[in-house]
Length: 113
Length: 113
Image (tube, rainbow over all chains, first blue to last red; front, side):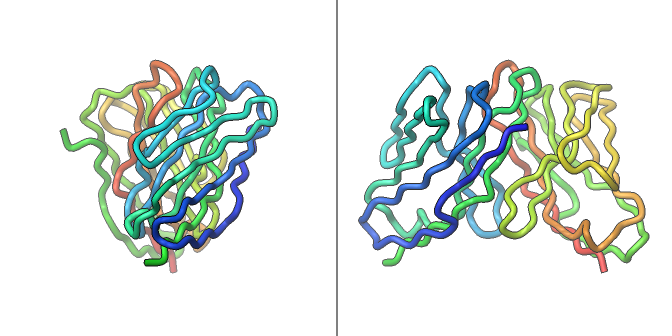
């Protein structure tokens, strides 16, 4: 089955700096890659996603890049702010027919004011 | 729209007791999912459903059961609760027309002692 790994597990950045989180996946058939943000005690919420026919997608300070050959995708957060502190989960589609996702273990991002 | 709702928010069970975690969505989504989240372990799929009357096992189904009699509701049943079932449980739904966003409920924090 699909295996999704995230690196690093914890990332501390100074406010205003950029943060990059990388995920690798194992199944070359995966074609959908979302990123979820989870604040402490809250539910995961989608912040950005990318499909396999696109190499990069941006939404204000957030961007995701996908390298299908290497089977990895990354989340980029620029000009980090304290409210960006959260756990970020990447995921990869397992099977389109039932929209199942395989999630990584999550990255704790801490933005230091 | 209320989105995805879950009850209860918190519950403490004694070993061997049973309970049902409720999940409902008002977005007319066909696809629904149950996950458990353990600290540092990401989201693990317990059961999922692609429509009323259809359910299937996910990654960690042992000790749980589900039913899907309506499009809106997807309850998760714990029989003979064990300490290993202490976790945060999230219900999610999606349209399922293609691999896409899963919308999460607020979660149920369950402790088995």
